[in-house]
Every structure is written in C-alpha cells, then in structure tokens.
Image: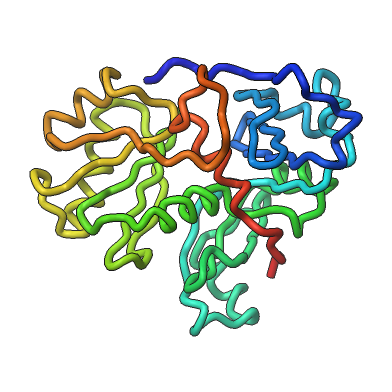
Length: 270
C-alpha cells in the first residue's frame, strides 16, 4: 500500500486560537485520524492515533479538550443501508436495525447522507462512547464528506471511486450525477481488493475496459495492490480532488476522506 501519510503541524498552529479552528476527527475501529483547519487551510494533522486517547487523552490532551469553533466527527459503520428521504420515517429505524443484525455491543445511528438519502448504520458502542463528549449531533457517517466531495465534482458515469484504507475499501458510483451505489468491504490481500471491485462493477454492469477507477486513501499508483487491479482494469487514476489548502508535502488524495469531513454540517442523530 501507499507510504504512511506525513503528519503535519504548521508553524503558526496555536491552540490558544482554537476558538477560530475546526477540528476534524475520523474514527476507525482501533485508531483515529485528526485534522485541524482554519479558513479552509490545514494547520495540523496526524494519522493512526491510539484510540484510547479519545477516552483518556494524554499525548493529545490539549488538542482534544480545546474549545473549537466547530467539531466534526466521522464514525465508521459495521453494516449500513441507504433509505430514500421520501420513504424514511423515524419509527422505521428499529425495524431496519433488525435487518442489520445489531449486537448488544453496537449502536444504530440514522443521519442525513445527502439531498436524497438517509444512511442507517451500526457502529461499536465503544466508539460512540469515545466521542460523546464532542456531542453526537456533531457526528456524521465517516464517508459523508468523501461522498459529498465526489458528488460536487460532477462524476462521470464511467467512474468507479475507491477509498482505500488499512484494511477496508469503500466503493462509490454515481449515475447521471445521482448516488447509485455505496458500500464498504474489509480486505486482507490484493486478490480481495480485486474481488470486491469486480463484484461491484459486475453488479453495476460496468465493463472493465470502459471503466475508470478513481483512487484515494492509502495508495500510490505503483503499489502492488494497484498493479494487481490494473491487470483487470486498465484505466486507473489518482483522485485529483482537493477540498483544503494543503502543504506541498501532503498528497491530497491521501487526506481526502478526512479533509472532506469539512464539507459536512452537524447532523442530528435520528
């Protein structure tokens, strides 16, 4: 996979000015990433931080307890479904939750994903507890910003978007500028990555030779995983979207999902 994203702190970064900053937190199953931004400019970021810091801050005590202008927290889902807004009713959430096979250690959240869809997803109760101090109304589904950023780029019907993490891949497809498919899969090998990509492409009836894979996340075009994908999909590109002003040493595609949380509004948990 790609080289680890460089951690970054701008010389002017000062938590005494946190009241004018926005804190972005991207929570994962066993770690979290953060970015602090101001006026659409990255001031500080770090990846693969110890999840326990969210419960008992030590290294990040000052950063996580500062009083920010705004906090946006992205939470992952263990399983999810999308419901059109026109069909959604709050009293349906419990019924849908049963279809997600919710365990005692999981919590169900329902939030607005975009103009047309509500996302209902389950996540570990421990992760919810870790971010409750930031207020659950400031939480969004982890991919909400990434989906928004791509939607605003006028995606082609021939593009299939992949956000590649340490052990998960998110796949996204738009048709006629409308969200047609989104899901996330765990993978452990290049073969897994190819399999899930092919599975989604086949479901969407996308012909490999006529499809362009647009990649973001922990990835470079010369990665062995991507070379394996290229055996089946000859058209592969790095996502060129950048939603923040970034320093030259940080690749925008590696920070895209985290940075795109800045596009999200505070979400009411339904």
